[in-house]
Length: 374
Ligand SMILES: [Mg+2]
Image (cartoon, rainbow, N blue to C red; front, side, top):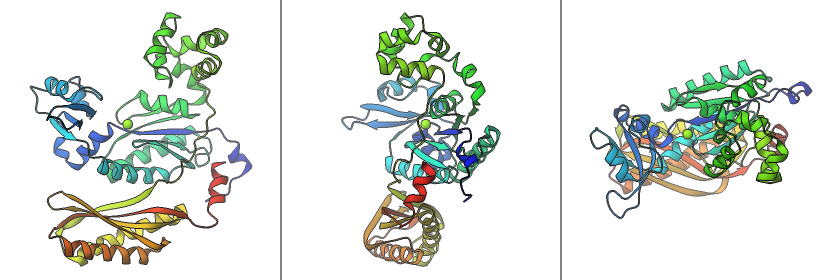
């Protein structure tokens, strides 16, 4: 790592928002590529009957038929009655695993990393691109390629001088978009957009603003700030005014560490041969060891994940007496868990994974992180 010089600390801020496209549905497509060209609807079933519940996420094919997040499943079925559509229940365990894997890729490319949801993260990259937006675009292209190659997923990235602009830029072009807004372009970019693109402008606020003659962010920017304060109060009025000018000083902040790290991989062929399994998990333990060392962490819990040949998912874990990041200690515990799992079940493994959690900081790392984040 390069030492931080005075020059780097004072460079232009460059912030990215990376947003995974139609995430839950895209995860299902990645797991089963034959779904890709069909309308695909991921559902939260309420469990009362086959049709009660709401749509969680729809892919773009389904959206073309008017299916979107939040509508009842029964309505989605009606709209897709005459097409070959697929309805699947949400599988949060799987999406969380995919999310963790993608986030650990993204994290490597940030000076400061802030996960903002299961499918989105802010990256402050000011230092590593030395305030240069063209270099940030190169970095974003490389990250998109890495996520596509290793996870089969597309994402949309917005780049701007702060979080507010980065977020709106990421929403500007979807899916698989890349939108960069340099500081001198902020006004021109925001001005024609509808006010509801700003965080905090919901349906009610939007109609209130419309009654004041404010339709676009540009209208809002030209509106007298004193009048905004009269209508919306001091705090909100000032926020709307600043936001309309693309002003946002909120730092990108680490939100504590992710609560677990996992790696999962497919075996060459389905197997219950301990050597074949442990060969693969040995590699995964090495990867987890590197990630733990990079982040200055030790883990208290070690677990295994098995996707069996019938696609059922199983996990086992144990708590260690002492937290560790040592690859040999990880391998030894993973070996014990697998041997026990294979003895207890008659299953053949198709994919195997290793997961660690219960993190403890290694001494001496905290200060460094605080310094970089500061
Ligand atoms: Mg998303």
